[in-house]
Structures are given as structure tokens and as C-alpha cells.
Amino acid sequence: MALPKVAEDNPKIRELTLEEGRALIDRLARQHLGVSGEEFMRAWEAGELDAQAERPEIVHLAMLIPLAH
Amino acid sequence: MAGRTPHEAYSNFVQPLQQAVSCVTDAVLIVRGGGYSPRDEPYVLSIGGTTAVSVVGPHGARFGISIAQQYRLVEDASTLGPWRVTTAAYAYALLTSADGDEIFGYHWHPRGHSPITTPHFHFGSGARVERPDVADAHFPSGRVALEEFLRCIIRDFRVTPQRDDWQSVLDATQQAFETYRTWPWWGSMSESTPLRVNYDEQFDVLEIFFQTEPALTIELEEDIYAHVVPATRKVIGFTVHHFRRSHAQFVVPFHCTLVPASPLVRKVIEEALRPD
Image (tube, rainbow over all chains, first blue to last red; front, side, top):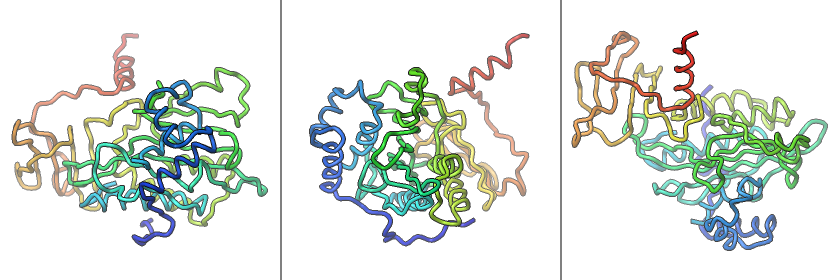
């Protein structure tokens, strides 16, 4: 089966700006970990969350970090 | 996924994933704006603006799914590209609800902070596994395509498909992915296989690549091309046009020995050669 054509402006794909990406991480970090997005990313980079690195919320948040860079 | 430009490769990667996701949810795929500019750091795509989005289960019950995938844009010396998107990490999970506990998840995060850097599967607290060793285990899984995860939750957890053509959509998007995948089927390697063989049935072109780096294409004889790194004179691959029609018995005109790069392949060979 050929892939259906999808327009470049596919409304089901949303591109976030850097600010929107940071805001998303901030909101999810506050919701799940009770810390700001900045604090989460600092702790992640510093290895302070290594012991919890397989926690589902942390796995997902860590995956999203490139949205902020 | 490949393309003539970084943007085309990105588009060829993202759009099929959005279609695959649309098989179970109408949630929007979130990507980083400008996520087609080559850089060392990976980009990421996810669904919804939350950790997980709700999907419909049997009898109106709800599950949650969480999907995030990191990717890189790489320049590919083969004719598949010259730009290609390669998956850098992923995390797919089924949850008891959009804000519930994880039932199971497929993870691969080779450069994260977890000591588990190979692809794995694990149960979450939502699976209510009683044995703590099983509950905490990271089962080697091989690398799993998003479509395989989606098929699993539709088939085994009876998540309700959101479109009638979900099977053909997942087949098509996965086939497109498989065409360009550099992941080995044995899955336990931390890097992509250095030997890649691709046969393009439509154009009857066979490609064999030992490495991917910028190379000059030199015609050895009619339909047969070698890809050579000019500075080192090293041959890193071949392309054979009209392969089935004219060159099915093609003999590579070089000496070479293949060294297994995967521990699992080495083990399979060792076991096969072990005296009874």
C-alpha cells in the first residue's frame, strides 16, 4: 500500500519553538517531580537522578530535553 | 528515512510516524521547530503536550500511551540519502490511564544516565507483577519499531483503532521504516551494523556498504560501481544496477573477511562450531 499523501502543513504535527519546548518540560517537571524544568535538567545533567533514571516519568522527561536545546 | 535534503529526510520520517500514531489517537505529534537542521545533539518527537495521552480500550475503558522518540539527521554516503534520519533513542509505554501507572514499556536510551543502554522491555507498577525481580527486570528486547508497539496494544490489549485502515497504515509506515533501517535484527548491538545490504526492488539496485562516509563513486564496469574514499583509497561499498536482470551472480572483486560485530552473532557462530 502506498503511503497516503500528507500535506506539509499537517495539522496533526505541531512544531514547538524553543520557548514552548522549555515551557512543556517545565510544566511536566512540576507536575511529576515538583521541580522546575530548569532544575530537572540541571539535576539530570549532574547525574543526581541516576538512581531514578528508569522511573517512567523521568525517562519521558529526559527524552524531551532536546526540546529545550 | 532518507531524503535529498535534511528537510525532506525529516519530513519522510515524521509524517509516517504521525500516520502510525493516528491509528490509535488523534493526538498531535509534537516536534521541535527546525528539527531538520543537522546537529550533533538529537531532536525529539512526542505525542500530545502531556506525558501520556488517553486511548480507548475494550468496553469503553481507557488506557494511556506515552511515546517519545529521539532522532538524528545524518549524511549518508549511500544513494539512499544523501540525508537520512536515524533513531537515537525511544520510549514507548502503555499506562493504566493517561495519568496512571505504566503497565509495560519499551525503552532504548543508549546515551542516557541509566546503566541499561541496550533496548529493553520492562513491566511497570500498573502490571501488578508480584515478583520483585520480574517487576524490576530489564528484558533485552532488540530494537522495537513504533508500529510493533502499536500493533501489540491493539492486538493484545484491545486498544480501539481510530481508523479502519490501521493494519495497512502500520504495515506501510513500518515497511518504509524497514527500508531505511540500519538496526540489526539481532538487536543487542549498541551501534548500527557496519555492513549494510539494501536491495531496491523497484529499481533493481543492490547496495552493499561496509561503512558510511563521504566517498567518490567509480564505475568498475557497466552497472557496477565502487564507492571509494579518495584520501585513503578505501572501498566502503558497492552499488550494482540491474542486479536481478543482469548481475545476480555478481562476485565482489575484492578480498575481505567479515568480523562479527554483534556479541550474539559471535555466540551463534561459536555454538555452531563447537564440537558435539
